[in-house]
Length: 214
Image 1 (cartoon, one colour):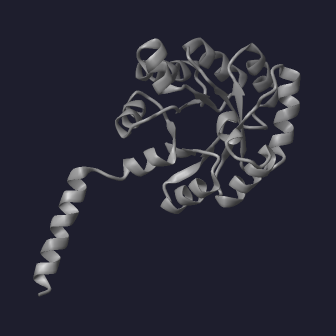
Image 2 (cartoon, one colour):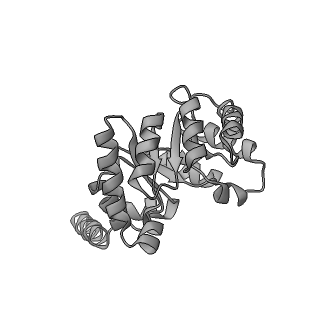
């Protein structure tokens, strides 16, 4: 299992790396568009900021163009870049040409059949948008469970990487449903570390230690 940071902000990348618990970074076109520097420059900076994988989503619309774009992006840091390929038949075709030499994830997955095709094509990951699926389909956690079961039945090592997770409870529910990895915004990663009762207990220990030192 791995936790990834879902951000294109360099400060977030450095803060997440400093926890020692975050394995890498996922980005998407929306996150990258919020950063003024060119996409390739941002990806190179994120790779330099931490040693783990950096996921980058392809924006081309046909398999031939996706493959060419993927090779350009992968060259930024061949040991780190993972290609996020949009779900759809063209994406599956692209993955079949790129994997396993280039690690690929099928992203925006909303149905088990998409995960099955991706697994057969050689995808290393399938990425569902859990909270969005709950809002649009009714139960994003059930989707995670179905995707995990499909990947297992396919007999491949394709793993569910759950995205669009908004709270610690949603994170743990996705993991218990079969997600092998999660990707989270920095505020959610921070929230995982905290609990009101933990803060209460730490404050009690601090008071006891202060009293004992008088």
